[in-house]
Image (cartoon, rainbow, N blue to C red; front, side, top):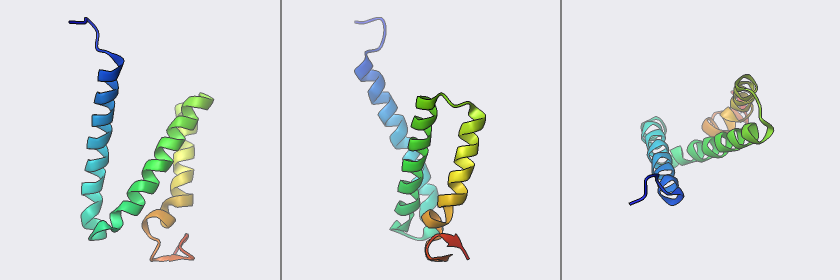
Length: 94
């Protein structure tokens, strides 16, 4: 038996943790949207979150810069992701 976990084992744990976190977000969004419409904000938020995290790591941004980019993304994409039926043109909050 190896003393340290293998890289494959660690990747498996990461994938399991990510699945549990996404599932928890989906469970919380299901009642708010009343059905499978929750998938749109879930997927958009997942793509934006992972993209900002990757970009912040690649560019070696500080936590303050990453936070400001997340807040900006929330204001730019929030209505399009979650309130597309109530937004003007599907983007600007009504």
